[in-house]
Image (cartoon, rainbow, N blue to C red; front, side, top):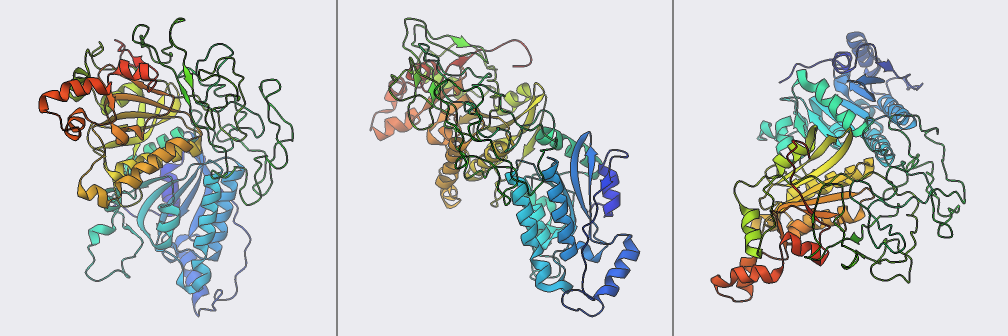
Length: 614
């Protein structure tokens, strides 16, 4: 078990030298011996203050951690076991309010036994205050990164800890909802540890104390630094900026947005991460009715008082994720076999002048005016709904495997199943200069061998990733990917997904773990994402378990991949064909990368390059 540090000691361990500034404590008055008149309570508080030098169980302030500014909340376990009372709630509320007012991430450094029993139910209801502040901060698009110290139990774990976006823990720390004195006598103590919480998918990583500042600093830089997204309020209300990933076909072109550029990407008048938002936490910020930015003449919807995304006093400065318009990618660009080329990343594989034009879906969210043809020719761009963020799409990675397109469907299957083919780890290592993983679905499961999720740095900015590893993906893997995509969307960070699975796990245990519901979560997260999602199929694309991660209108493929409604062997079995008919069945399914381009399922096939970076 790690050494138990005081609040001031852990702040000194993490804060850059001379950067910590303690926040003023709210003026609150308590009745003698507290709200319950608990005999001896004032004396207990006085002894705790004399022993620790603190007046409450938390110390709150701002500091830089490896150069990134944040609000730090350090619990003092020596003060009545780090318990939460009314005055603790006052300090926590003030700290979160300050974070939102100054656009700062929040880092709870937790060491608590739970609620303060000497204050009874009034102490317990502080958990509701904390949960409310955490929810408001989440809506504002600000990250929360918790550090679990020893012990982290009770309501402190159930709110500040488990409710954070990223959860780091010190080795051997006692972590669990039930404290050591309230568990069943035969309970396995190993289940109430930091390590057990990581294994159960409730925490992301165990970090050694000597490495904590560096790891926390990297997380803060990725999620809240200059290269991170601008958060929930990044899009200026009423600007009418085109939604990322949507069709912006110019008259006569019928072509969608090029990967790596996006439609008016980065044009949102969003707040710079860490900068003052210009509004107090209780001040409503609304778009001026009729405000328009970069809108096409005669097509701009004007913001009216009934459609503005300004925050109400209860939602601070960010529009509620449940009420913001959703951008549904809907562009597809395909080439016929005679015109298809292997496109380098960041370029669109478009059809030649005599080939068929790119198709543009005209369903909800496509932003193509009614009356245009299916290819989107002579279309007029309609601005995206207000409140939609404009993040630059993640660039498409280069292929790492051998070049050359497969001659038959079965050759495509064999190339994708080859033992030596590059898989997710190789692609992620080549794509990012650094990356940090998240782990667990927060529902009791993790799939570290089947789904890799996290955030990384690419060309100075943050990109989120969810990558299948070539195995059958477990339900926990899908739920972790959905968690990743939703978090990235809330923080305004673009997403890269790598598709590579023979299919979702289909054993009985997978069904008991909710395979269908887990896959549905990923479909829903991708469909609802307001940030652009870029997908590369790097190996096997096995049915719906693979399609769930694919971005409609922005999916690409490597030469050594395939994508199929069903595996050729299973298709032949269903059709009651002989084993020797599996190969022609693969051809019938049209699963080669070039087939997928012609069908409009993927936008293009990416090339291999000799450079070490894609």
